[in-house]
Length: 116
Image (tube, rainbow, N blue to C red):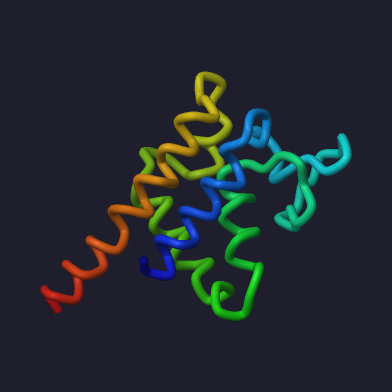
């Protein structure tokens, strides 16, 4: 599994449990809205908050934050935070996008390398 695939899979795993996803803030910790991207220890996270938390979890993954955010932006019809916060958005849709990116991103990266 590529490093980016691991980031997306781990972010999906953070958001998958019932009630683990939120909107309009990066996260919720002990009932308090977290408006910066330090979601470590949060009980709930938004799409971007989960991806950033995984990326910031180690030196190896820290360098993946920008590529992961670019992949998210390329996969969605609008900015990832806006997409996450749309009133009709569901937790299942957010988790599904992350798992799909875990599968598709390594394929796209290898195709890009083949075409270089």
